Length: 150
Image (cartoon, rainbow, N blue to C red; front, top):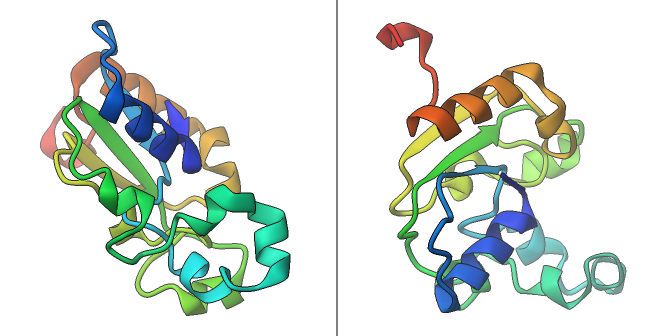
């Protein structure tokens, strides 16, 4: 399981390295298509000081690291949050978001399943529902959907 930038780090590693026993992966709130916040705040000295060089590479432009990684070729489920503690950031991010990453930008081509939960970016991993969903995906290769009788 990865959270946020951890998903990009894993994708970056797997682009050049093979893990024969990787198994299934769950990403929580990954900026798989970048984040608009980097586009907006990236040029600021304060943002660069807080996020470092890595943060500068997570924008939404086609040359950003997340876009350059392309699709995934491993079994991954993605859980995106739809609640925010920061109304200013949420106003700047189009559509549903978790205060850092939009629901749509969490997706990546090749993912096995996708789930939206009412959680905020920094604490999504603490949710008992998210923990239950992670375990279910790791065991079954899909998220538990109460509406499909699983």
